[in-house]
Length: 148
Length: 201
Image (tube, rainbow over all chains, first blue to last red; front, side, top):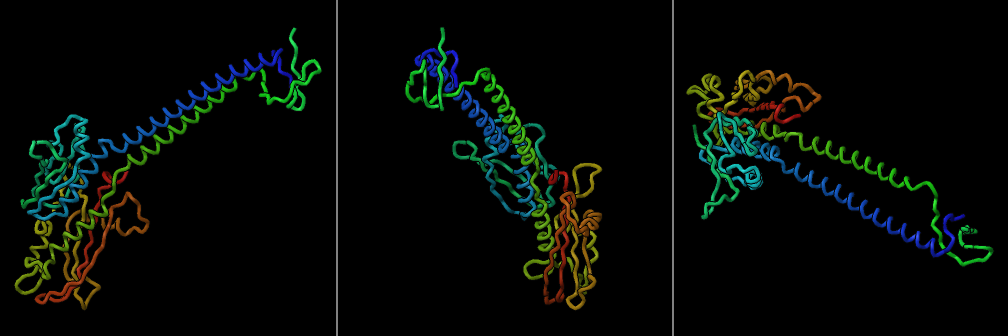
């Protein structure tokens, strides 16, 4: 092998060290870009899994099924902490996210109409959020089922 | 004047006929500086493809609605069972004083069992169907009496053997009852829940 442009070993070594510096910076930039890509991907996945639409659908179906299996006189306490966090992010009052209208339960967190699901149990339903002594929401919702 | 460095066997530097010892030399290929940049471009294309694939898969997974119809049909069947028979006795409104089934109960079956299948949306058909059949213990081929409510069109969909998610979910449950006053019966409940728009994408 003939190394052109190197008339002395020390010059060649100098050029080699310059090359080593460039290689190091390139590798660091490459790793940083890869890490940025991975972190963006993970953030995207986390955001999708806790999306408002999914929370609305999940809770409205859960509440509808609970009402279907309930009998008049029952009082149910439902853990809706995820919905409370989502309503805080969307600056929506937690007490107003659940509505009942003609055998349909509607959960509206994102203020875009929400998600409705029909229940076949012909009962009268009311819901209100549970509050602690300080008046703060605990994340629990109380659902009462009574005869029509 | 530049001197060229001659390496033999990759191990010896020799200059002007003098060996300078052993060095490991990195081979420098001239004119290939742009090669690294081209490789990184391919790398980002691959990353973009991976990102696109992940986004598509995520949307396919989280975009799919939860299918709760199996549970819903079970709850409906349980509700019907509790309505016609509970506490070891038939519903007293089901039988007349003569011990026969009341037609009035059949006419108002859904309201008597506190069931509401009506939709809030106009022009949309009912999404449920419920049928309760009573067979005499000694004569199981034909029902003695039956109660039904909801959309009867779903019955034919339940007979299709190759089940598709776009078809209504059908559940058949049966139990024996022995009421001292009324006798022994086989009660067969068929509950069907459609709601394909909200449970199937």
